[in-house]
Image (cartoon, rainbow, N blue to C red; front, side):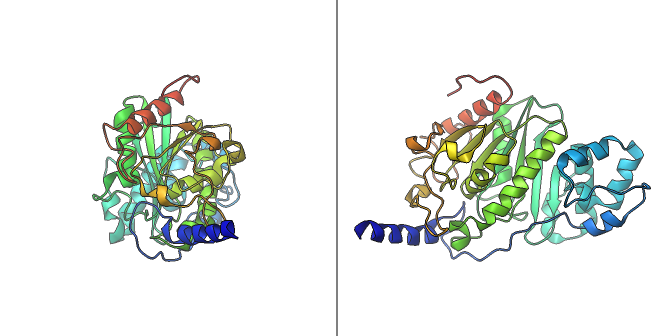
Length: 353
C-alpha cells in the first residue's frame, strides 16, 4: 500500500514538474505538427518537368535523393523557385537547394514572426511557418564535414525562441554554435527544432504524445542526411528532446546518442532502445531535472534516469555545468566531452572520456 502511495505521488509530481528549459508555469496543450510540408498539394499537381514529382508524404528520403540526382541544375532551380517551402523541407533533397529554398521562403513570406531568421549568411536547412514555426540551421560546411552533429532541444522551443538572446545555451542555436566552436574545422552542427515541443509544465511535458510525433520527424530527418551522402551524425538530445530521441532510437541514423538533463527516454535500459548507436548520458548535480521522479505510469513520466548506472549509458562528466541549461557553456567538462564524442563519430571507436 505504501509503495502504491509513493507511485501516485511520483506520477503527480511527474505531471507537474517534467518540462524543458523554461518556466515553472502551467503547460498548454499543443497540437503536433505532422504530415508533409506546406505547399505539397501544389507540388504534387505540378507537371512543369513533364513527370510526376516525388510524393512528400509517401516517398522515402532515399527516393527523394535519387529524384534530385537525375535533374539538371536548371530543373532543380525551377523547383526551388516554384515550391520553396516543399524543397526547403524535403528530407533527402540536396542541402544546398534547401538553403536557397528556405532563404526564398523567408524572404517572400513577409511574416514578422520570422524576420530574425533572415540573413544571407544563414544556412536554414528547414523552415515550416505553420503553427509556432519549426526551423533547422547548419553551422559549418556540412557538405565537406568529416563529422556532423545534430542538437535536439527540449520544451518551449519553436521558430520564435530558436535563437533567443536570453538563456542562450538553452536554445538549439546557442547549443549548436557552442558545440561547433568547440569541434572546430572539419565539423558541422545542425540545430534541429523540427518538432512541436511542450509549452511550460503540464501533461504534454509529462507524456510521450508530442515526442512520438517528433520521433517520426527526427528519424526521417537523419534518413535525409544520409540520403544526401552526408555522414551519419552524433545526436545530442536535451531535456524533453531526449524523450524524442529515445522513441526515435530504433530508427535513428546516428553513430552516437547523447542525452543531457534527461527526464528519461521511455526505456529501462540501453538495450531497450534497440539502437546500434553508442549511448551517453550527462546530468549535473544542480540540474532541477534531478527532482523529476523517474517513473512511467499510465503514460505519464518518462522512466529510468539515463545516468543511472543500471541504465547502461556511458557517463559524460558534467560536474562544472550549472543548472538545466549549462551543459554547452564554453569551458565546461560537458562541452569538451561532447566535442570528443562528435570527433569519435568520424572514426573508429576509442576512449575519449
